[in-house]
Image (cartoon, rainbow, N blue to C red; front, top):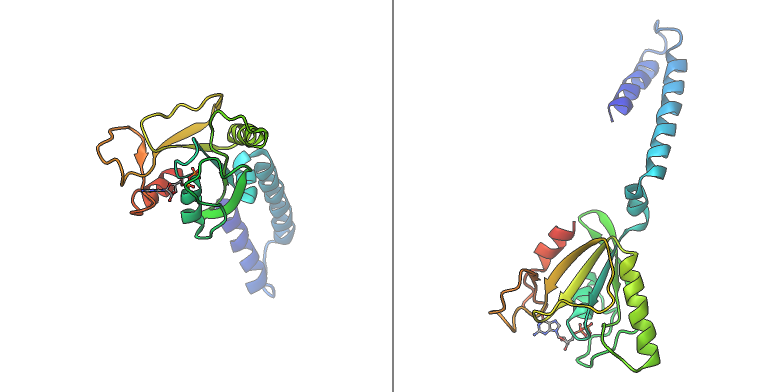
Length: 196
Ligand code: GDP
């Protein structure tokens, strides 16, 4: 920023005082410094995963057992009905992704199949995909509508945010997880702030 301001002042001088006497090599200095800055910026953007995230979006994955309210949360956040919300467990079988804006940051939010023991071949594939998607994301939102936050075979090293859903139903539960209710629209803004 400092360098850009410095270069801008030089550029303004070149434009404003073009018919007056300026140091002879001012233009040359301006060009070489600008090119140098450009190279530095390109290198910074390339080497930083933050830069990549700003281009492609930070990846956040919702994980939880079936019926805990994953699709409801993604629908609420995206304001569109992209995931199917039903009270029948095992409805989301593929990974559904939606690009959102969290306070200016692009976020790719993934809704995944509910994790449970299943004999269904298709559901099993969905569960495997869900766990793999979680592995590759920047943040995992682990949702549960009770005190049990265990997810079999979930092996992630990145940040997990524990979210207690349907807080309107069980107010007495004392989990350390962040409480939200889609029904009463409580705790969601705070969750978005936490993520941001
Ligand atoms: P998913 O399987 O985890 O994607 O769960 P869904 O989003 O499909 O929700 C399962 C059921 O829980 C649906 O009947 C929703 O209406 C209900 N549900 C979701 N969020 C809330 C909530 O905050 N409060 C209450 N009372 N019910 C909810």
